Amino acid sequence: MKARQSGVLMHISSLPGKYGIGSFGQSAYDFVDFLVRTKQRYWQILPLGTTSYGDSPYQSFSAFAGNTHFIDLDFLIKEGLLAEEDLKDVDFGDDPKAVDYAKVFEARRPLLEKAVARFLEVGDLDNFRHFVAENAAWLELFAEYMAVKEHFDLKAWTEWPDEAIRRRQPESLASYREQLADKLEYHRVTQYFFFKQWLQLKKYANDHHIEIVGDMPIYVAADSADVWAQPRFFKTDEQGRPVKVAGCPPDEFSETGQLWGNPIYNWEAMDQDGYAWWIERLRESFKIYDIVRIDHFRGFESYWEVPAESETAATGHWVKGPDYKLFAAVKEALGDLNIIAEDLGFMTDEVIELRERTGFPGMKILQFAFNPDDESIDSPHLAPHNSVMYTGTHDNNTVLGWYKDEIDDPTREYMAQYTNRKEYETVPHAMLRTAFASVSYMAIATMQDLLELDGSARMNLPSTIGGNWAWRMTAEELNPAVEEQLYYLTKIYRRLNTDLLP
Image 1 (cartoon, rainbow, N blue to C red):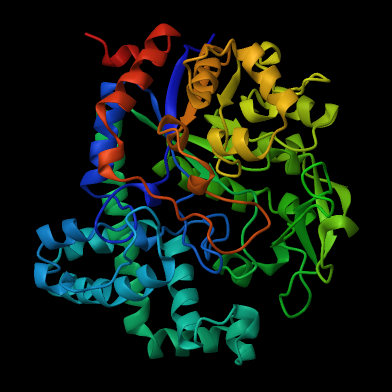
Image 2 (tube, rainbow, N blue to C red):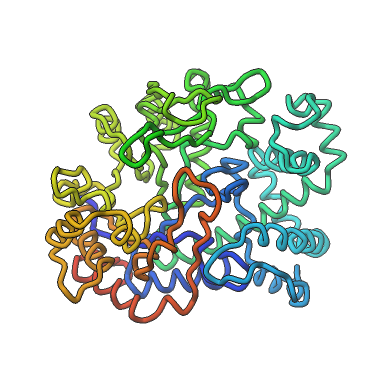
């Protein structure tokens, strides 16, 4: 039986700092220290991939590359790759509690270009060349893709005016690699910066007995190096445009469902290839995470497929996925992996059977647990030991926002009775207490709920673009009272990280 443990969901972008967005800098190390002091085991984050239109970490230009916004500029200064005056009067945004992605995008690129140029003059080029060689399988593709994409004013690859490079014809690739050599080198070096800083941070966490729970989106973006390079693995037309896209069906939350727009995998082609792309994706993921949460796990059993021309997801239908064959191939290649199955949404006996066969723990969301008129599969009294209990996820409102704006009085009353909420107790505390008291071996508190923030701190509202992924914590908010509350819940419900005890 797995030992009882707990942790906190806090994305890198939400960490405090003075350069517009959280980074792998000192505030990240301070957050590890906070987890150590409160005797946690896990730091859960969102995907670390690049972001684009809509700023979503679930829509990335690459399934392998990292988000260079997270490269810490102060560390570059310490390495002599930037100077303090380089950052003077740079506008990263003026709200310490929200990321202004447009300003961050505009402000960071010239600084990183300067740091890259300096690194190529004075940096550890032997170590850099080793990184490039070791990661050539995905790095060269990503560098090519981004260099050409920038050459064509950031257009999606299917909109590039040069058909030869859209089709990756060898002569065209060779020509662009020569023409855009400096841009390719920029993307190689910035990925080197990213992984160097991230792996140093991860080592610090691991050395202090904190494990990183990473997040893997099930799908990739249509505008990505992965689809450009291997369109045969996706349901696309001759031009590489998706003919079928992903989403989820209508439900009580949305009359038309959710239209995500990601291209659907050609599972038959992936099966014929022995699922090699997935094996490599997971192999690379476990180099940078200790545990991987796979988003939309139910899509491996059956997925909601929508015609690409549809305006909503309501026209979609269920299609069978690879089921256990994929995970059998992964296990044969990589052995047993520490994976969390995000098994939310429309659950069937087949999905549950797949999850149980893999042995992966599923997820329970406390905000979904309180139906005064009927049973809920997220009720703590139904949770198996091999599960992860959350107050909410990045797609949920904060507990306080949910309580104030999304539920009715009978649900509020039932929640109060179920949690035995005291008159003096805040709603977020009652919910956190219930999550930590559950039989689930892992309990994860979202940082916003620890801070008892309202709906303005929500990370993402699904099926909307703009205003998402922006919330940031300030250094002052992480105060002794918050620390004391988290430690108390962890101790009273027997979730203390025993590796951190005297």
